[in-house]
Amino acid sequence: MLQRCPHQFQQRYIKKRKARPAEAPVTGSAVHDAIERNYRQKIESHEDLPIVDLLDYYAEEGFPKTALAEQEQAGESILWDTSPDAARARGRVMLSEYHGTVAPRIQPIEVELKVSADFGLAVPIEGRFDVDRTNSVIDVKTGKQAVKKPKEDWRIQGAVYAKARNKPVEFHSIGASPKTHNVTIVTPLESENLLVHPTVQQREELARSLRSLSNWACLLMAMYGPDEDWPTLGTFHQWSCSYCGFRNNCPAWKE
Image 1 (cartoon, rainbow, N blue to C red):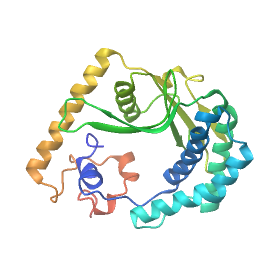
Image 2 (tube, one colour):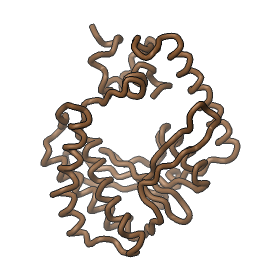
Image 3 (cartoon, rainbow, N blue to C red):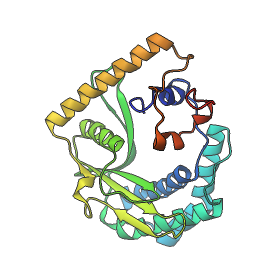
C-alpha cells in the first residue's frame, strides 16, 4: 500500500482510519470465521464439523456477528453491492464447497496464529495466517473470482510467513460470482503457483526491499509529519483508486 499510494497508507496506518466496510470483505471475513471454527475444533477431534451445523452457525451467528463488528469498527454502514441476504447466500455456497472439497484433507495444528518476523527494521513485521499444519502454512483468500497465481501482496505475506515459520505457504483461493454464486476453488493441487516457498536469495531481496520501504516511510514522516497529507505520487491509479475507501478525502480527487 505504501508503494502504491503513500496517502492511502497514511490514512490507514498512521491516522488509523477505517474505510467504509464493503460487501466482499465482510462476506470473506464471515467465511473465514466459519472455516476457523471448524479447523480449531479439528486440532483435537481430527474430524470436520457436520456441514449442516457449520452452515447453521455461519448463517445465524457468524455472518451477522461479522457484519455488525465491521460496522462498529468503521462507524459506517456496509456498502452492499447486492444485498445482505444475497451476500450471506454467496458466502454460504463458498463455505459449503470449501468444507466439502478442501477441509477433509487438512489437519491443522494451530489456527489464526500471530507471527512476527525480524527483517532488521525499527519494528518487527507482524502477520496472522489462517492455518498451521505439519508441512505448510495455509492462508485462505476469498473474492469474486478465484486466482491461480499469488498476487503481489500475497507473495510478501508468503515471505513473511516463511521466515517466521520456515515452511512453504499454501494459498487457497475461493471465488464466487455475485450474480450466479458459481464457486471455484484453487489450491496448490490445482495450481502449483499457489505454493510459495521463497529461496534464500529471494528472502534476502525481500528484506532489502522492506528496509527500503521502511526508510521511505520514515522520510515521509520526517517531511510531512502525521497530519499533513502525504503525497499520492501525482498519479491517478485507475483500478486502485476505484476501490479506495479514502478517495472522498484524497487531495488528488477533491475536485
